[in-house]
Image (cartoon, rainbow, N blue to C red; front, side, top):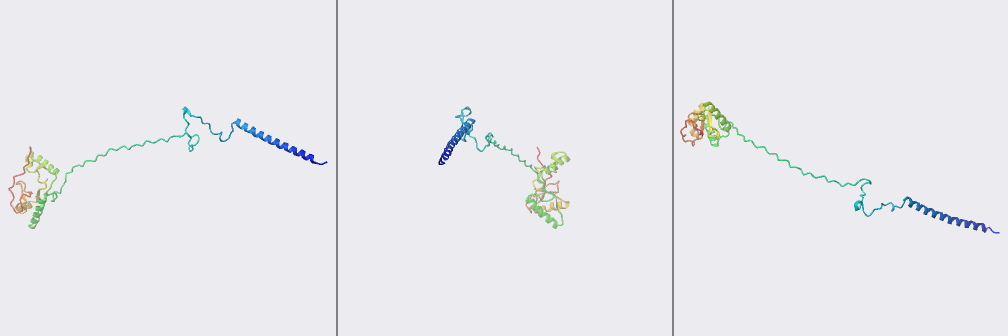
Length: 233
């Protein structure tokens, strides 16, 4: 006898086992698929949310911004209102206060060119004769003249009496820079006698110190007035 029978028997068994194993494997796969479907476990496509034809109120839900973390509500950036700067009222410029100029009355400052030139020539000529001429009061401010006149009114008792010695600012030749009071007495006397040579004249009888440029140099001075006169309504 040969031993072929046992080999054939083993081969048949192997084939039966192979077929059986395949069948079992297929059954297992089918069972696993049904079980996954029953449990809600699906493929990646099944995990996508089911989107209905409309959202709340019949509108389609807005798309989700991929840059926004899940669960964070999207906010529309609010625009900060731009404030128009309010105009500040212009600061009014302070008004310039009118100032009354002051003068050095003991100098030729503020005198008219005519009076200044003639007086300087006369002072130089008097010095050659050994006589000193000084300026006691030249150009005055309106404020200074007003003060002097007020004092004269108080001293002499009336406008008219005071104006014989001191004129109000609007009538004063000192305020205009056209008059000068000089000293000392020797200088007054010399200028009274020689002033015409330079065009300078003593104007009032009661004021031997008061001189003005009243004539052309070299010509005689006009007659003197007894005193100053100011109009007063």
